[in-house]
Image (cartoon, rainbow, N blue to C red; front, side, top):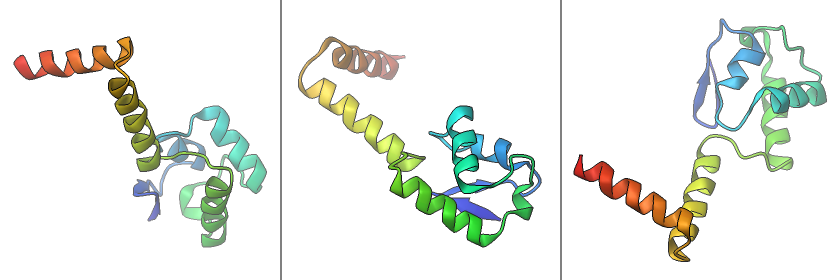
Length: 103
């Protein structure tokens, strides 16, 4: 079982499908990451060595790719900033939360 930033990758899936499950990695970025690391897209998660997993984690950190919790935290801070400056987008978020609470 491989965990990357708190998300567990399914051992039976191909690496490309498993990495798409991480928040913040779309198809294009996932292909670029695998090409940079020299990992084939058709290999299973079970076949990926611990060395490649560490290399993947270092690559994500060095290139400042936001994944999972760091991406969610970044989005929350951006929304909070919009609310603080009372922009139209921020007010829509507040209004949506208010009406969601009513119903």
